[in-house]
Length: 521
Image (cartoon, rainbow, N blue to C red; front, side):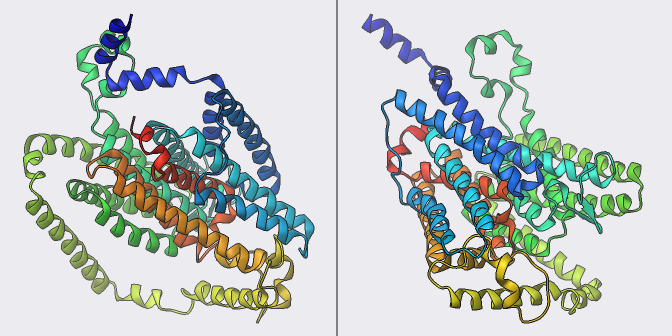
């Protein structure tokens, strides 16, 4: 019997072993995992989960998922709760909001903020528990990615009148179901980095490599098993996401995303840098052109012309993917293995982009005048006043702040001139107003713990591995979202924060010694 078991173990492929382990997981785990997946997928379509009624419903769902997670852990005799600094900081945030609520200026708004932050912690904690392997994290990231693509498509549909979303398309900007273009831009930027990872590491996989069932692989024809359709799928979705990202016309979001993209290129393995850069330039360039033409046609009520532009861009993206696969397979594979040649080509492409950008600015001098005009910078000036007034409020209540909703309730007593804004337009100053310096320190602790975990996970993975690529994509997506949150209230939309906290959880799992071995199974 022992010899038979050893024989089976030697003959079992790693892919089949993973499938067998996944199939052996109890139903309580499956409910917890796919419940979390549903919690990540559906909220973006419900006004970004910005309003309290939807947040309360999401919290009830998260509580059920949390209970099933404990039921599964009980079956394993695993009663661990908090085992990492990031766990403690993530739990500390709702606790600080609870303490701040005792001195809140509006108890109803304070309770709403407590609900939101408990929701974030539950989603984060469940993700930490159910992500046991690299495949688990990838599935959750695919859920976020597909939800973002769906939100992007919803924005295109509402712009052309195919569906109705209140405030989904206004003044030539795509708001989609988020009803706020800057938060939508942040969400799509996060998903965009995930899309680059999927394209680079899984876009050229065959159908056979994606099937874990040995019987099914044997039953399907060889020609089908050798097909590589995933690159087309990811290229198409990346095009949709980037086109709508440009369609939000979020200046801050686009600038921050561009800066983080340069950092993302630096952190990639050298063999991935040039393909990812070329893919982003090609797909992003077409996305920018199509977005401009699509919005112009949609604003003119020419839905047919808008979709013609979109379809043409999509066809070119798919044709480009086919051409890349053909050229890469026949000509570029040996060349891409030479680090010196790749570095030279990469530098040439970047230099060409800089020259082209300078030429465009020189040909359109009015663009710089527009950017530096007072009208164009009005929002920036106003937000500086918001921060100034927020600092005055923090000075008066420095320890635990004004409680949840404190800015909305009390800012008029501090404003330097008459304006209307229920948000500070900086998530970190918002937290400081509501929970004082204690809450701000907790938020900084969350980011510090995350970045430390990302550092450990990145360097703990093999240089060419998909795991390192996944960690780096999650880190870049989180940085793009976190940096933009410093100048806007994106994280007040709970759908975006749930996605961000899930990235925190996945990186924390990969960066923790306890899970480093099982994450690579």
